[in-house]
Image (cartoon, rainbow, N blue to C red; front, side, top):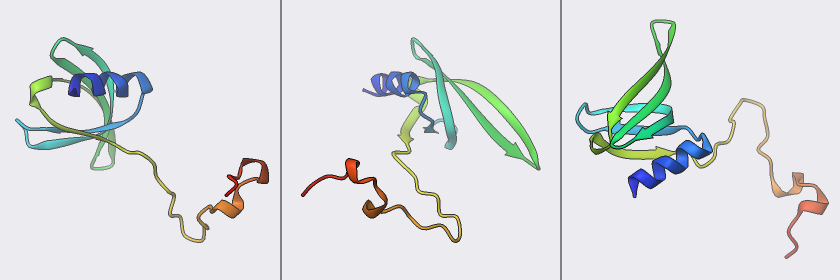
Length: 96
């Protein structure tokens, strides 16, 4: 099941959060670049003391404890209103 979900996230180019059991750490907003047998290659960016780094890391499938992905997000910038159904064009509204 995990193998299949990782293939799906790879095909969709969707960022994932991966928990590595053996290292007890999260890799945040990574892209699944390749799956080859039991090796999963992840690409992600990290910042350290005002320096940005790009990493590509291969991990074993059995060391992955959890994978999650963001379904959606809402920008919470100050002063911006959240879009509501009233903001939707009339042609796209659901009748009901």
